[in-house]
Image (cartoon, rainbow, N blue to C red; front, side, top):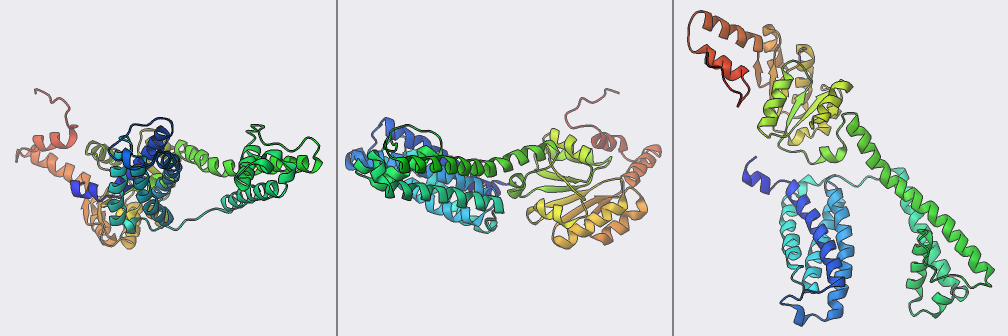
Length: 395
């Protein structure tokens, strides 16, 4: 991958967005507690600097969520990142701290990359039924607690006497539902209605937070299990580009994987064997456990963004079917296949392979050339069979 390709890659704006989010959180927290005045400090009131620091930390967390969703190529995350990045840059300026200027530069640098790669972020946000239910339940409980506490503010002295009634009610709901319980907002000792309401907020709040955490942690646990079973997660697959797809696994596949690894070329292997997939995954390789001739795993492997497809198993019939499927899904992709039997070379080409190599035919040709003393076949054989960088024999 050339420099220009790296600069226009979808990975770069995602990385810049994530870095901007982390910087926004760090500088926001730093500006709340300490100040390191910059050139603009004299022009920005201190209260504005502190407010920008607090809101900057909150924006950073939202931007971090957007960066995570960008890895899944979500269009909604693309819009939210374009909205939050300028806001993050503006908050960095208003913080007027020497720590915040790298944040401004990084946030602005991420915007062109997102605009250039707009077409890559084309997936709609799809939430499961459990995720939607968890969100609705959590929001409903917070609304119930806030409105109820404000309506019953006569039963809660701290809310009744406070200057910001709704904010105090929302604060009480969050603290109670999350079981933090600072104890600064409590119902009056003689208020039975207030106590019953507080109990309902505790019960409903614990349930809603538990459901919400369960829906968030379940995908993470699932990803761990998939990795242990030799399967790539959707997040790992989503940003694959300019990579090679290796279909199946056979005697010739291992040298292919070694060559791709040594050349630092990204690749993904599609194998039907669960044990083989787990073995390759343990070695740090990207693996999809599925039939290489099926359309679905090829689409999951981002065939649309791949540079080539390689198949070299010991079964020419399965290879031909896999080549045919890849060619139908992407007519312009370069496909290279290895033929175990020499007579299957033409068949693999008819299936759609651009190049078909017969290792047996090549080996036989080199042996005959060497036996007849024609050409420097020994050097050719050494180049093929000797690992790059391995010490050569003195013979």
